[in-house]
Image 1 (cartoon, rainbow, N blue to C red):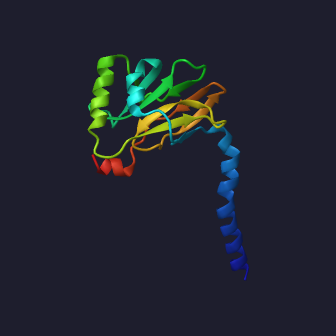
Image 2 (cartoon, rainbow, N blue to C red):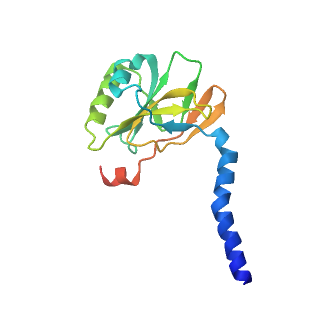
Image 3 (tube, rainbow, N blue to C red):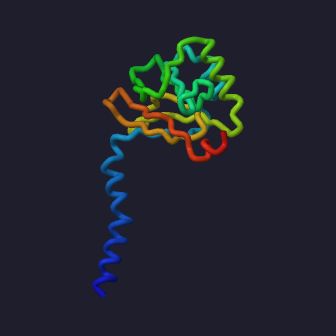
Length: 156
C-alpha cells in the first residue's frame, strides 16, 4: 500500500513539476513562431540591406547554408548571435546563399523571432524553428546556433 501511494505521489510530481518550472523560467526565453500575413522570403531577400543578415551553415561547410536570419536595422532592438552565425556582408554572398537555399529538397519557412513580451526582433528562414532565443536585456535577444534536426541529418 505504501508503494502505491509513493508511486502516485511520484507520478503526480512528474506530471506537475515541468509546468511549474516552465512558468518560472519562461519569462527569460524568447520565442520563434510562425504567423500568417508576414513578410515572405522574397521580400526579405529584396530588402536585405535594411537588415543585419546572418547565415548558419550545415556543419562547418560554407557550401551548405542551413538558415538565414534578418535583424531589422531601423529599430532599437537587436539580436546577438552565437559565433556559428556568420554576417552576410555583400550582394554576391547574399545571392549565393539565396541560390543554395533554393535548392533544398524540403520546405523552408519564414519564422518570426519574438521576445517574451511579443515584440518582433527579426526573422528566421530555416526548415524548423529549433533555436534557443534568450533575453539579454530589454532591447537585446541572444540567438543560439541553429541545430539541424535528425530529419535534416538523414535527408541531406
